[in-house]
Length: 164
Image (cartoon, helix red, strand yellow):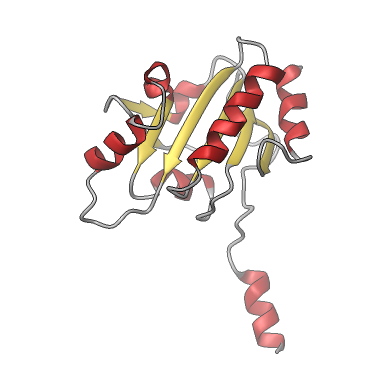
């Protein structure tokens, strides 16, 4: 039994979000219009970044953006990352097309997608049907992070960090 407990303690955590004060790790992806982007672009304005790592988490992602409209100023950038581990036979174009059906066209350029989990790996995230949410300052540093739904008590940390 001690070996099992040690193994669990050493296992990668689903909550290995970048911590407060850390810069956003480097990663790249294409938006839903197939335009390439790099994480460096997220500097310049406070940002609400909602990340999903499971194809069935779209409703929970939309919940964060619906709540953002109630809690945040328009000057706070809204960024969504869809980072999945899809089978080799599912093309990125197919995944992008499916996502376009669920994301309003006005937000296609603010929705970055990768089908091989590259952004999740860069951010240290595991597959989960619950979104990972980061509040970034204008320099691209993490000022708050949670692994929660928008209606959870943990969400207050994000709203508070982005209201400053």
